[in-house]
Image (cartoon, rainbow, N blue to C red; front, side, top):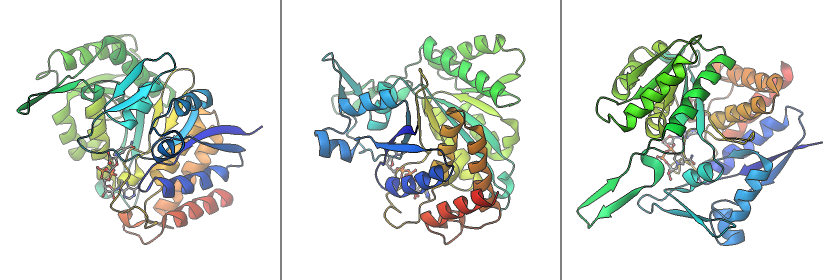
Length: 349
Ligand code: NAI
């Protein structure tokens, strides 16, 4: 029986990197049925709404999905999602709405350096657990006339404990050595103070795994200066968002940073850390590796560690032996050349 996986093709480079990723996942030999999920432009075409109820329902039913990046208009700032009971969810963006409608609460982003590509960050190996339901991305903000704006930084005990617990579980399952909480509790003493104290409560229940904490500004400094200080990082929504782009830049490209939005009941929507890259869209030169490695995270979630490792080994070979590198990594290969090279390496292994 084939495994049904939802596919959101996204905008910008989305369709290109999706095609490359599906090609690699098909080469695992696992029978997949790719189920298009009408979100964004497809939602508008089919249902007249970028996030139709039908799409949310389909994602909940499928539980497994691959999502390419979606363009988000600056300044527009509101996404409404109608529920069957007549209530309406209000979110700051389409991406945020998908996560919260599905109750996806953490986005683990493993970012690793690559020999011969990442320079002094070749040995970097930092896994950022980004909380994805609240913080300044809750969408609780308003204008005060046209002279000021106010935005609420929401931190609840439930979400802070949940992401910390996930971080320690992740560390244990993946043989990691330490978990670090990132915050700014000296300046945001209540919201970040609560995030940190919840982390410490969870840390006390997980004495087998060492833990510590750093201010977010110091974390940015140490990531650049001595990234070996970090292993697993637990961060609130905005800090995790920013630090994962920083880490991706240090190893050489956003095109190397995978991710997965994880929720209850086995739900997962894997997606790269990067956006729709409109500056290079349609040219066939986007690096598909972040989404392909996100596909490997999907395989792990499905319990197919063997195939996940096969994909990851092939990706690493293509990178380290410089078999096919897109321009962001200094090469001249096209998106599908990278996918083809990965498939060839999977076959040879
Ligand atoms: P971006 O991540 O799309 O691009 C930043 C830079 O990285 C650009 O120079 C781009 O060409 C490059 N880049 C990104 N991914 C790449 C890849 N796979 N291969 C080669 N180069 C790559 O960030 P930006 O420009 O701020 O956002 C563009 C759009 O994407 C916006 O509408 C934004 O809201 C949206 N976005 C969507 C996300 C999502 O769907 N989860 C996440 C982040 C941004």
